[in-house]
Length: 322
Image (cartoon, rainbow, N blue to C red; front, side, top):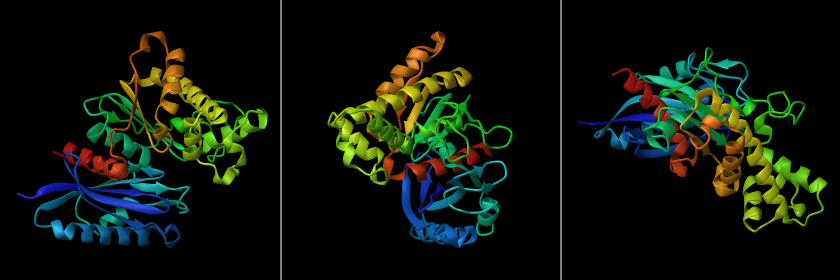
């Protein structure tokens, strides 16, 4: 009997990764294609399907493709569309699932990349065995997926859970969404870079970051400086953790999660971001939740976490149909 696998596909602005993942979360094979967004979604789908076939061919005798899960920016689980994705430049609404279904005869499902990450943690990662959890992706922006009673919350239109666009500072920093003061303008890799430059302009403290041009500043550089004791870098992490922790303290009141999982590049800074986030959450959370919400790192292997998240979406739908 052949092993059933789900194809996991994560669509990024530069590269799109794919893999064959079994029900236990083992990635049997993995590959990638250049996204080339300017070539359009039809071209990307054709290259992805070709890559999946090439990946599966040597395993065809031992594994069977049961379904496809896709994580993509601004993807809608209900409609199967990708809507005005900011990092792809596609205009309007793209019927992405319908394009894939022209080439395959197995179930295909799509959601946004943060939701896929949440399902990956639930099925294969740090949230295994939990029913109520929030996953926060701290990358260039801030994405999130909310799981309540064991189910991912999509909302009425498929776009629930945008914690990154909660207003934390009215008339604050301008956000890519067109509003001001969104959480992601403070608690993200981009946000902490902005914080560093604000601190540099208002403090006379010595800092190795003073010689780094803004366009070359990254979360990784700030993290490295903080580990060396740089006062500006340490203050930036404290400020970021304060805003993230106090915002999550309010978020806890909505779903009372067992855990909040921090995922992505900025989370790789470890306790530099985890410690202040925990401290400020505990300082501001409602008393009845105090001490009950864990702040955890991702339990997914970094190398193929995006593939596992998308595949987890596929497996979630396949297991519903049993």
